[in-house]
Image (tube, rainbow, N blue to C red; front, side, top):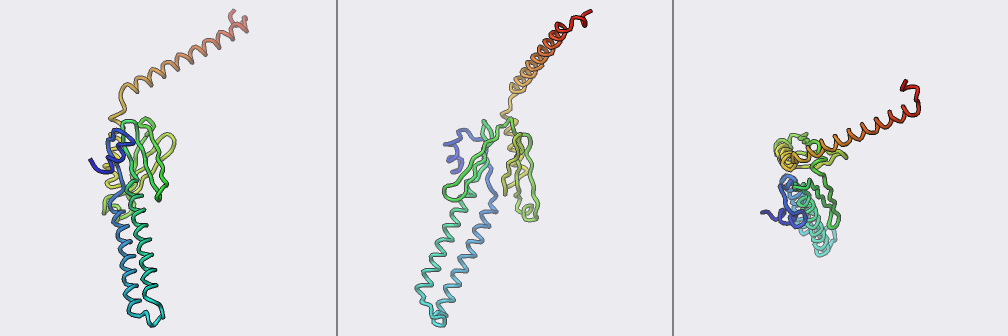
Length: 207
């Protein structure tokens, strides 16, 4: 069992599957963070060679570059864990969508499996088809929930639908049929009472 599954299992109990972001988004963050680091190193080397021309003390520049490097690294960690904890959680009770922003902000929404109507996915760019990731849309009776940058969106869409089918028992269909029959019977009684009241109020209609 993975670390993420252990973490969410404490809060959600039985978990059928977890759907996270594509590894490509992590690679993108690492790439841009690496570029920032290389830029800072190049700046420091340049200042060391030419500091006397600009009348800048190397210690001050070193402090500024170090501060920028620490901030860039903290930003990398925050963004990494934001993406890592963004997850679609499939459980027997329904579908939970957990999202996180920054250090303290997070949100969680739940879609009942009976409310879920369909699941669609999109892959609009060449890079998305090349690295096999895309966006998933969960369409339910109250609207739509989107989850971006999902690996293998077609397979994960099928996983969501199969989980819904697995836990949608025939009993729920029978119960809905019973409720429909009760509703039809109640409407029939209302119509009958209405007709009886009209006949009593208009005796000539009985002749």
